[in-house]
Length: 110
Length: 133
Image: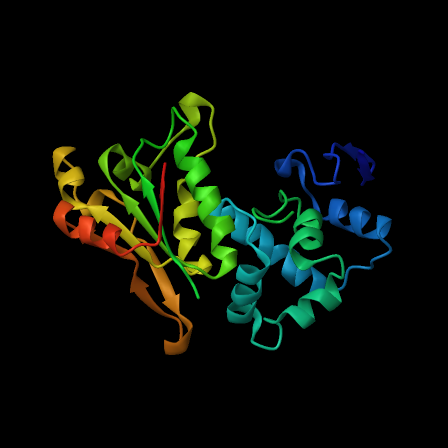
């Protein structure tokens, strides 16, 4: 189902992940979040931006366990735990945050 | 109890799907808390070469993914010495793969272990499961 953001239409796959991750812009994340009744805060953006940097460097969307550990290192131990991440992204930090960040679904996520 | 899983990589990175498939299985398998090792032998050593550029063949360059293996707690990467030598390569031609030891303030440690054919045979002998790609 295509998603509309910033006056443009973005193609997604059947699970709502952006088809072309190069097309991503912040408005895409906002629109995807609104569709799921989620309002993005600075804390959400920290994780979304982190995921985009991770993908840029390693060319993969990290598994939740890896994301948790890496967030702990980068943003502090109080944020590097699954409770914190699941409060921000109740549909699962891997799936939901990666989707908003325009990344593919994490490898190993079913 | 964790089993010892060894993924043996034998083929050049592009041209067949084996290298990418192996990497994906390793990343998925790493979620299951097993004792994972990787071995690169034969043309498999080309998978880790630096400066890969896949533009001309229209495929994604997945070589940066190997540097994420440390995050997945895959910290034992065996390179067969003879395979490198037979191809005129040295460790300097390969990516420098490290992992961060959380218990030692994220100190970086080498993941790559250069072993001879005979030493690798011993390592393979210690494994519970061998997966060949």
